[in-house]
Image 1 (tube, rainbow, N blue to C red):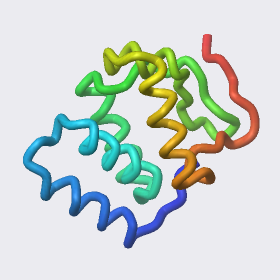
Image 2: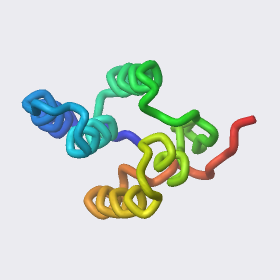
Image 3: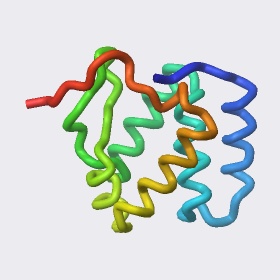
Length: 111
């Protein structure tokens, strides 16, 4: 799922750190995009920090590579926004970078 791209990661994180409002939708989108191109160790640290800050829903699904997968409903519930809004934002993100959001192999339910 993640493909390390140092230049893109640095550019996205620079934009994020330049923001005054780190709670905005735009800031969250930047972090989500940065996570998709972060070095593996930083991606893992970012993921763990997002869990610690309770920013992610519980991981109920993973792909064959063990990457966490979330349903639209889980994301909508976690963000407190309508499903339609999450669907629209995901469509935009997938349109920009489809390879970053494709699962590796099959998706499996945990427990």
